[in-house]
Image 1: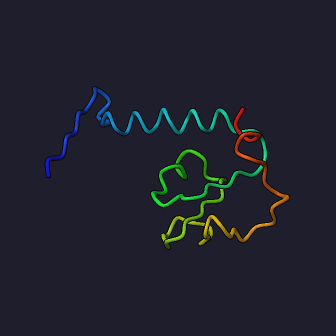
Image 2: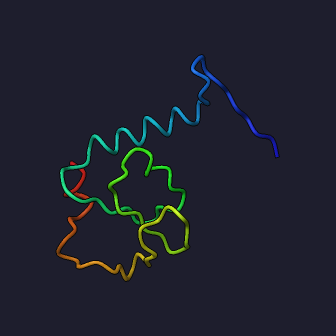
Length: 87
Protein backbone atom coordinates (compact mmCIF):
# COMPACT_ATOMS: atom_id res chain seq x y z
CA UNK A 1 0.00 0.00 0.00
CA UNK A 2 1.28 3.44 -0.94
CA UNK A 3 0.14 6.47 1.03
CA UNK A 4 0.15 9.79 -0.78
CA UNK A 5 0.31 12.97 1.23
CA UNK A 6 0.57 16.30 -0.54
CA UNK A 7 1.15 19.05 1.98
CA UNK A 8 0.45 22.71 1.32
CA UNK A 9 2.13 25.75 2.82
CA UNK A 10 -0.10 25.56 5.91
CA UNK A 11 1.11 22.03 6.66
CA UNK A 12 -2.35 20.54 5.99
CA UNK A 13 -2.74 17.70 3.54
CA UNK A 14 -4.79 18.19 0.40
CA UNK A 15 -7.23 15.53 1.62
CA UNK A 16 -7.76 17.45 4.87
CA UNK A 17 -8.44 20.62 2.88
CA UNK A 18 -10.95 18.82 0.64
CA UNK A 19 -12.83 17.39 3.63
CA UNK A 20 -12.81 20.78 5.34
CA UNK A 21 -14.38 22.42 2.30
CA UNK A 22 -16.96 19.63 2.06
CA UNK A 23 -17.96 19.83 5.75
CA UNK A 24 -18.08 23.62 5.71
CA UNK A 25 -20.42 23.38 2.71
CA UNK A 26 -22.69 20.99 4.62
CA UNK A 27 -22.72 23.28 7.63
CA UNK A 28 -23.61 26.29 5.47
CA UNK A 29 -26.54 24.42 3.88
CA UNK A 30 -28.11 23.14 7.11
CA UNK A 31 -31.19 24.96 8.28
CA UNK A 32 -31.51 25.97 11.93
CA UNK A 33 -32.55 23.18 14.28
CA UNK A 34 -31.30 19.76 15.23
CA UNK A 35 -29.47 17.68 12.60
CA UNK A 36 -29.12 13.90 12.56
CA UNK A 37 -26.26 12.19 10.75
CA UNK A 38 -27.01 8.59 9.85
CA UNK A 39 -23.81 6.67 9.29
CA UNK A 40 -21.43 8.95 11.19
CA UNK A 41 -18.84 6.21 11.58
CA UNK A 42 -15.74 8.25 10.76
CA UNK A 43 -16.65 11.05 13.18
CA UNK A 44 -14.98 13.76 11.08
CA UNK A 45 -18.09 15.93 10.78
CA UNK A 46 -18.17 16.33 14.59
CA UNK A 47 -15.18 18.70 14.33
CA UNK A 48 -17.26 21.06 12.18
CA UNK A 49 -20.77 20.51 13.55
CA UNK A 50 -20.50 19.40 17.19
CA UNK A 51 -24.25 19.75 17.86
CA UNK A 52 -25.22 17.17 15.22
CA UNK A 53 -26.53 13.87 16.61
CA UNK A 54 -24.20 11.21 15.21
CA UNK A 55 -25.41 7.65 14.72
CA UNK A 56 -24.01 4.48 13.23
CA UNK A 57 -24.77 0.79 13.40
CA UNK A 58 -21.27 0.03 14.74
CA UNK A 59 -20.04 1.48 18.07
CA UNK A 60 -17.49 4.31 18.18
CA UNK A 61 -16.54 6.71 20.99
CA UNK A 62 -17.76 9.84 19.13
CA UNK A 63 -21.26 8.55 18.38
CA UNK A 64 -24.30 9.83 20.24
CA UNK A 65 -26.40 6.73 19.54
CA UNK A 66 -26.16 3.28 18.00
CA UNK A 67 -28.88 2.99 15.42
CA UNK A 68 -29.95 0.97 12.43
CA UNK A 69 -30.98 3.40 9.66
CA UNK A 70 -34.08 1.30 9.04
CA UNK A 71 -35.17 1.49 12.70
CA UNK A 72 -34.06 4.83 14.11
CA UNK A 73 -34.65 5.27 17.86
CA UNK A 74 -36.12 8.75 17.40
CA UNK A 75 -39.66 10.01 16.88
CA UNK A 76 -40.20 10.39 13.13
CA UNK A 77 -42.05 13.70 13.46
CA UNK A 78 -38.95 15.43 14.84
CA UNK A 79 -36.93 15.11 11.64
CA UNK A 80 -37.38 16.66 8.22
CA UNK A 81 -36.67 14.89 4.96
CA UNK A 82 -33.14 15.39 3.64
CA UNK A 83 -34.71 17.29 0.72
CA UNK A 84 -36.33 19.69 3.17
CA UNK A 85 -33.20 19.93 5.29
CA UNK A 86 -30.83 20.85 2.47
CA UNK A 87 -32.20 23.44 0.03
